[in-house]
Length: 265
Image (cartoon, rainbow, N blue to C red; front, top):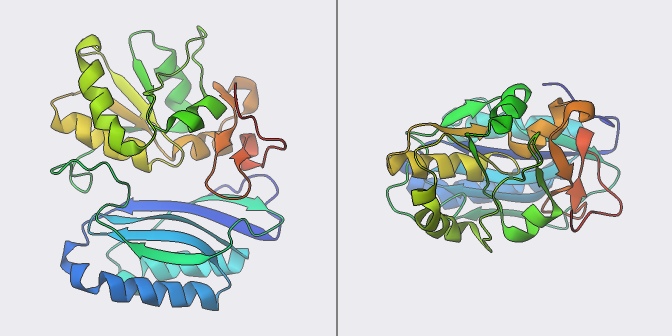
């Protein structure tokens, strides 16, 4: 994986998720969570990981060698290889952005609250960052920002004609299905492109839409973080800052912290 700018900084921040069926492991998830938390403490890693029957999600930070080791451990012996190769979005900063080390067990790794949504089995079509501009510049494509309202206000994608992505005006991801029900009649079977910070919310959102019968559903591979890492600012459709859930608050192209953060466009 190509490293972003300032990879020589002291702290590596790894945002990661993986939808994979851990149902057979459900009786052991709490024990596994404690073992992972212990390993993170040994490696001087802080941050939060969430485990559920549908997979793993979270952001952790520490010295680069420690993060590399933790990612290998997560993909290896903690789940007996069931998670496979985990490819996190990496960024770098001078100081530790988290105060605590926490590993939680939840019903969902990202909470939508809709029974029957199965991102471990079916999701929309991935779109690489290099192809994202072409997709969202198509006037027939419905572009939806699946993040919360305050995140959207800080920054979002603007297509070539100046149109901003649709803001669902949600406070939490649990409200996204209600937004879909209110809006779906106006989409007229058009292609739908969705995005989020690291890819997890938009991936689950595509699974939900596919379950409702939508066919042409797309999501940005690696989320905004992947786009800001890989796409040259000179051709970028991103405007503003990308909110991150740690002390950096917002990052921009090259995954560098923005100071001061742009709290509105």
